Amino acid sequence: MSVRVELLTYINQLEIIDTHEHLPVREEARPQDTDVLGEWLTHYFSSDLVSAGLSPEELEVARDSSKDLLKRWQLVEPYWHVARSTGYGRSLDLAAQELYGIDGVTRKTIGPLSEAFCAARAEGDHYRYVLKEKSRILLSINDNECQLDCDRRFLVPALRLDQVYFCPTHRRELVQRGDAVGVSVHSLGDWEEAMRRHVQRAFDEQGAVALKCGLAYDRSLYFAKTTTAEAEEEFNRLFANEHSPDRRAGIKLGKPFGDYMMHSLLALANERGLPFQFHTGLQERNGNVITDSNPTLLTNLFLEYENVKFDIFHMGYPYMLELSNLAKNFRNVFIDMCWGHIISPEAARRSLAEWLDAVPANKICAFGGDYCFVDGVYGHQKLARENVATTLAQKVVDGTFDVDRAKEIAKWLFVDNPTKLFSLEDRLAVAKQE
Ligand SMILES: [Zn+2]
Image (cartoon, rainbow, N blue to C red; front, side, top):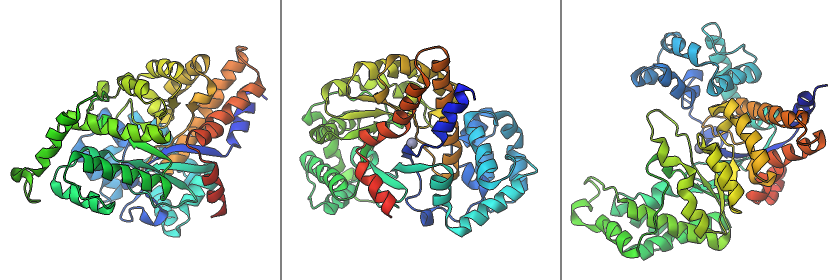
């Protein structure tokens, strides 16, 4: 047996932690009015199709399950053909083959595949089948914004406050959010108190295991140190007559306000020693500004908030070497490979090989599916296990370490590191009981 086969066999039997998903909070909450093209083109591979030349308008037609399936397939087929071998494409082919027993996504198979997809949806046992039986995932950390109530057999929530506290557009939002936690909001200080209570409740009563920031989609990840006065001036615009009645157009608060709120949230996280997941690197959908999401932009936060565990997402792609430097340098910076094995399987392998030479092996989490639909998770975890096995085997062959050490590292990356980083020991016990 080759070293790679031995390691892959070992890794395939591991029950793993999944650091990041965007799944509907329970199986019944999945969109019902859909078919295989409608759901599988929700994200990721759809962006590769657009990159290959499909127009955004054609993509909307392809997603529309009320229209004829074969006609929609014909629309995407030439682009699917050229994009099939990307990580995104391979993940879907793996799902077709190994979840539904159908040989990939093609003109011949799309009809039977969609029938099998709809039949599985009607059965209502798909989360258990995909996440537990096929993917051997112990728990997935799920980002569904502020929605924390989720099926605890499979999911534990991350809390994402970006839209709520960083980007209010009307005074009404302040009133509603404040009411929910018993704060009457008239000042920036009241607003921070509402956020503090929200975080407290989420972690103490509602089972949140991490904070999450997705702001790199909307702005630079550099959060300057701003004064309370600057932030307050922005905040007070929400009370101006011209924006105040609900029916009037909302406003976009300026960068100093977002900067201030991030520091305020990090001060809370620092007090409690919370893990904080940051989106960095590639952004989903087409036509984004990649330089906004360079993880080195967060350096001032790493320096100031020493007690926060910064979990840096998506391998920082394409800033993997920068992330290597940060994780090597800072005690409170961790590398998270979520989304990475399908963004580029080759980049995932090469980066992991580099990190294992530069960064202590307790600083890396190997897998997060990062899908909005559960079928994608299967293909991604399969590619992740293969990539880690291939990289570790190469290290054994070149004499960096032996097979036993490679197995030890594999278990750290897939199980022990995320369990420790997110303090999941008790949650795992609950998930097993339910
Ligand atoms: Zn995500």
